[in-house]
Length: 386
Image 1 (cartoon, rainbow, N blue to C red):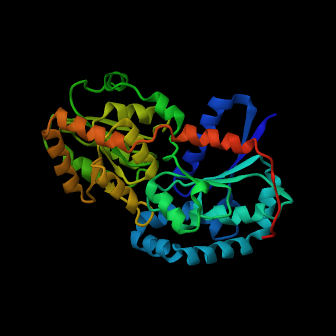
Image 2 (image 1 turned 135 degrees about the horizontal axis):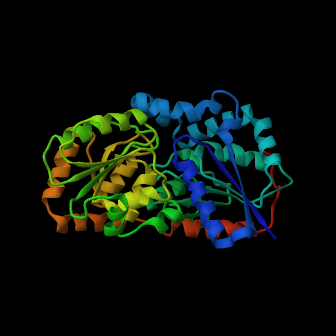
Image 3 (image 1 turned 90 degrees about the horizontal axis):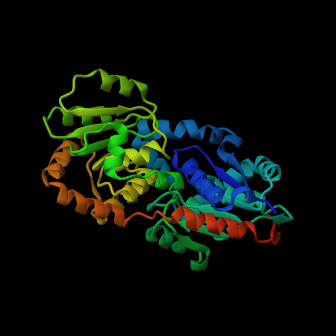
């Protein structure tokens, strides 16, 4: 009998969508036609201003990190999070119950912290409900919203995230440390450095530094790239501009000192893993997905930016494992790249091994298998009314 998986997410940052798509793709590989999928961007369904969060989130974090930090810490904490959850549910009760009725499932998987508890409370109003699972998509600094002791199971990416769950009332039998789910097609698309460089037309001998601007081309990429290219080095500079067409045009039109390769938006599942395989160093913001992917690729990381709050711990994870450094100033980034390149290939290989030490390539398979097991369990009878 076909099992139906319902994913709950929202597009406030790319990690929530990419996490559920990774699990979906892994389950498709493992179980084929025996499983069907449905997905709801829950915030989009809610009343204003929550339904505008997919647009407001990147606007706030890119224009005022201080404002975002104040908002983040204002709602973080067991009691503050509970009040916020109650407010969201009570003001959107009818909408959430409609979402639940309109999307029947054998198991529910939530990859967004803010919507987890309010949506779960709507499921509690059913006479019978499917198992409800959460997949924590923040690596280390995990908001209190993630943890609800009443959910059936919670997958966390790190030991730190697990310990925070215990402090917030979760039981040890209710959580599993898996790592962050990285799409199986990303892992499958990883090739050797030589093969990847041949595919892209890179110089097979020159070290390659990869700058990743994110899907929307965020950050001070141009300043860093310009400062690095001002130095005559034996290096090739690789830049992924994302959807920032202005950045791509600006880079393509400048006169270059070093070899360069400029890309616009690339697919996370096919092109990005090969670009990472072709490179020796990555410069990126502290996003959990990119860090997890870079670790699998064995790329030493220079973290040039972070979102205060949920990405603060990501920097700590990289630093504590000697997988990279955190340098928010462009001139410091350039100096670090030059220092690393000057250390030679043996030291770069050691840094690469450090990055691989924090990789969890099997996470997506562990989660997919567990989701399938829960999908095959009977529905849970109502024992309380929300």
